[in-house]
Length: 396
Image (cartoon, rainbow, N blue to C red; front, side):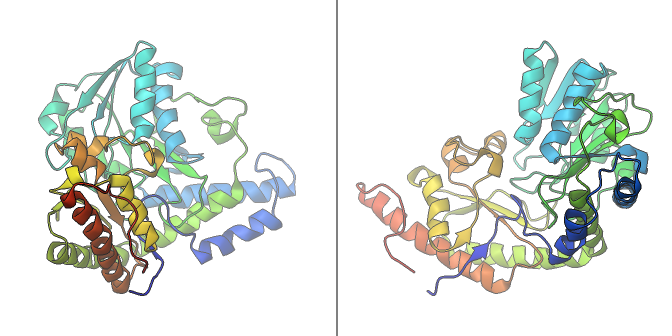
């Protein structure tokens, strides 16, 4: 087995598209003006920011005035939840799904410590929110936060049905993983708030956006400047915003083509895993999920070391994860898989394969072969009852 480098962790981050980098370079090198300055350098930067805002807003079905640039999805989630409660006083209750990203769960927990009411929506065995559970929270001064597609399993949530079940509540969705993979139109989804990030679609890190529906009296959570129509203080990073614009343009213009390719690769991955890996369990359903994520665990997970699985794959040059990159190394079982009913051992031993349109069939075949080699000595050692699972004993 000749060692290769195979990156299958695109839900954590993606490589920067060369065209995106080229578009950013002039704004890093030559056009360095502050977009809030009145002189020519500043005006040039302001035009670039507003053109990017207009294009990205059009791609999600929003008006440009409804799009606010942030440093990424985490800031967008925090700003929306905290502004709704603390700054704008729009809500006194936050309801979120049990499978949300920690960028929603942790600020909600922090707000609960300040006295705001919170509630967690359970999910079914596929990780989907039950619409009937949402209906009981259909009341004013309540913010419901349900992600569009899960970052660990790729499962798509029924946002339109959730909107219909709770028309009186405010609705937020974390669309960081779905944008650029499946259609995202904020009007059709019926959301009041949404969060986005560039580095999941081959754009730069450090830039994202939040959608705030017109008419909502949103007050900034971050203060110190009048940027972004007084909704997010801080000098706009023009180069990053332009990079976000180009990455979003490419992702949406090639969405169907990319999705078709990733779906084909995911099906090949499923087939090979089923054929060659005994005891594999799929946490990602074949239908109703993003085209690029396949999350698995094992029937004998109690005999496996989750971190050793990831490190073993890395030993063979394959980058995968066992959940959100934001919680890597925490030693805690995935809260997403636990909410779906998986055992603690199965949640710890899960592997998330996340592909891109640039992934090849050779990458998929190599990754499955690497997983075979990683699992074999682990299972042998465990069955003998003495050597703990760890790095592979053989070199590629």
